[in-house]
Image (cartoon, rainbow, N blue to C red; front, side, top):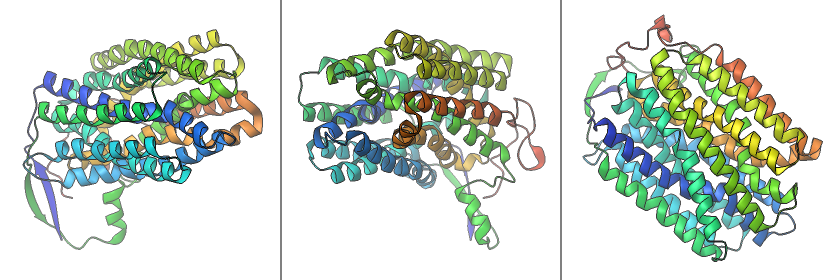
Length: 433
């Protein structure tokens, strides 16, 4: 069979690329995260008022499964899409478009099973868009600027959360379907606009003859061999564990209703307040952490410190049942999460096993980022049954501690990694698939 080498991608000017990614990604995430953190909870209360914690967890769990497979599949398809409009821009539009249609379906349905199906499809195709956006970093950004743009991109999700919460707070009296329609509109218009800001196009493909590839080696085209590329696997494990700790935010609305006795209006306001505070904290360290990491030419100390800071904040949630304490804990967690997200994304861009499979491999990494945001709500009822809210947050804090340990094997900037212990600036484009 033939192997291929992709070369000569179109390059967008750095500032234009940064704005295009941020704008489109933020709009897409507003449409995806606002339901995950708020509207799905209230949809389940509306449809299944007596069992909303269980039905919400079921919906979130199924969505997690489809998010898990959607990102790497979407990335692999994006890597192999080679049309004039561009392999990234095609899925920047197509993925969110299908996802937003499913959000409209959720807004109109009154059946739990339909919410499950629609949310699963939405998660699957929104992740196509995520994979395409994040692949633009290794595609078009020089290594020396990847920490900076990763830090900027790290602001997108908290910005999206705050904008979504603010919109829902302003629209407290609006009907449920009006909220779903608005989010769906934002979720597709943003990516369409960004697709015309970002430059993309066909990529020159060089065919390389190769011998028959055994089945085991073919599996390596789906997931890079942990034996050859252990650093990539450790990066995924570290990111997954950290996001497990961070993703208690996906259960904030349920927590405020169930633990604190808040009404829907109070919970909406409370979540919006905490997320806005988190945004400010993340903004401070995301930009600063990415730039300082580039200047210091060090990444691991920033990752260790960030995860430890987040652990402290999570333990405050565990042992202090007071909204003022939640604010303090949110600030602490936000400071750690902002720095970790920025530096971690730059590290991943540096150690990707194959530049030709950038979107697919970034898609695998995005699974580690997105999956916990669905897993945590899914396993929350079990954790709460075992030991209540304190145990819930202690379990997540344990994940943060494990993340620190998983970061230790990762290579620092300038250290060799991968087969033959190549360096980060090795020319990967000459390698055969």
